[in-house]
Amino acid sequence: MRRQYLISNYNIYIQTYRFIRNYAYNYKSRIYRTLATALIIALTATPARAEVTVLLHGLLGSSYSWEKSGAIDALNESGWRRAGRIQVIDGGEIILSAPTNNSTDINLNQNKFIYLADIRSLISLEKQAAELELILTTVSSQHPDEPIYLVGHSAGGVVARMVVVANNIPNIRALITIASPHLGSPYANLAYDIATLPYPLRIIPKMLANKKYKTLRRSRAMIRGLIVARPNSMLYWLNRQQHPDINYISIVRNQLFSEIKKALVPLWSQDMNRVAALQGKSSVIPTYAPHAITVDDGYLLGDILNMLTKTRPLFTQ
Image (cartoon, rainbow, N blue to C red; front, side):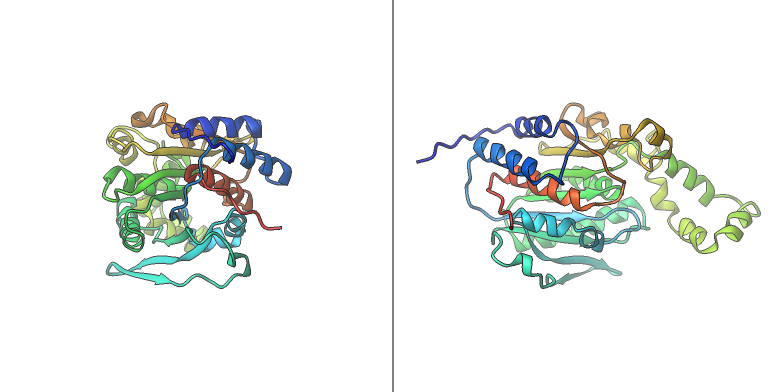
């Protein structure tokens, strides 16, 4: 009988994972992925139980962002199958759509589910968090007592952390954020200043970009929640709240020196270790990619989730 090892500190797995990837996750090489996964499996036991992952999009995105990027297909390769798409419409009604038919979902692990969450991204972060909590309550009712792994991209990572801090969904086991502005974004400060220009100064941006400026004006409450953390700001308050004892993983976008000033979310804002209440509690995985979700994120998430759930991933040929 093959000897198996159970290690409770998942940060050890993450650090081993980072060492193998040499601080730059290379998805194009299937050999690297397979070797890393093999080592992870060697370090973990493999109990069979249902596991649930909920993916949340970022600002101006939707659940289709995960589909169009190819990230969902990459997760399929790691054995995770679509369970459905969940959205909240006006009035708080929940709509659960059946998963789209996809041949890659056939014969995948029947105990590993992916739910795609859709929330309105132009409303305030507090209202977005309320919608996400409704979605997670629905997921939890579908899978009572089963662990939930929450993944948020960009601003979605901040919204997901707000729900984690509220601690009303007891079965959340991990929070994974991708390029999320946990300490805010200077671009949000600039956008908020433009969005709140008094009349007649606002006439100028309205003339230059009417539709975009109207969208900016409608999203003032949301943008305000993403300004750089400072006293009396939402992020300053959030970052000092008690966070539950779960796994925190920050997937950050490394930036070349020439790109730092142009970065939508600065590198220093993406690391949850810089959150006052989480210092030293988050594992960090650097990646080299644009801000948007990519197919490579799907491969990385597949490896991380299989590591956290301690199950053998199923790679398709």
